[in-house]
Length: 340
Image (cartoon, rainbow, N blue to C red; front, side):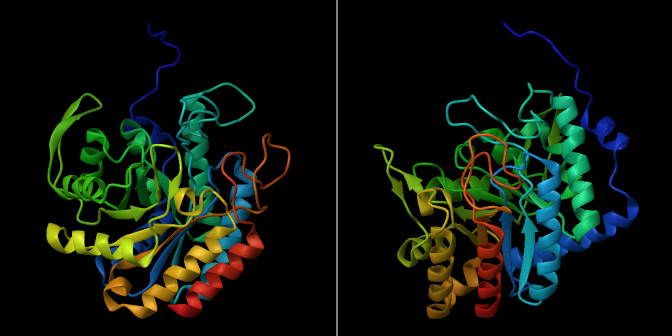
């Protein structure tokens, strides 16, 4: 049984009530170009998608993004920094804090309408304060049009990459979409997802039959896998990445591109391991030209304070997965920039 609670207006209505200002649209357009040029191979820079596991509170996220904006000025000749403003949090068992989109205040009950305005306000303020447009995860495909005008990068998570609607909606998005390998780690499934996203599609979305032309910037994110016993299986090592590159070569997909997610099953959620993982990948990049050509960057989970907490008591500390602290993050990004 479904109990109707709050009528949520269509995206066009809510976006019109809190639009991205014209001055920021120019910044967003340039950011879209920078990110797209890396994925397409027009630019030799690397993308660093970095920020908290989930954006549960606006003030520390804004402070983090402002710091990232200042750091971007130091590395922009080598890197494109994209803040993670992840407003949806997937839950393995379907309960718990689900992100700002559903629950703008993690101490209160879910209020999706308030959540939509909260994340639009946060993203707009972030662009204004830092000059950086953000990345988010498309957890619920029907919701993406409430925020897609603000984002320069969209991710499809491991639990969603086999879902048909995620694949279809990805085919109509105008910015790069990174599709993670499924929890099983199957490279074939991931490449099939990318193929679907790069292809034109006709399907039903939000009460409409829609047609897309395909998204040539859909690409792979390697986040590690989980076996049948719950053990993490990393897939950032040289041999595994080269298998993905070979799969790309055989598939005929456009714009072969790989992002390494340094956390999740690659690190076993041991957040400090993200530093070692990025260093190993950068070393492999120097060793092999095919590796270098296909590797486009990293995902890194990071916040003002390292680790995580059960309750929101420490400012700038994750309430979901543990993250690198700012000092380690800054040092890591500068180190990656030096090696590009």
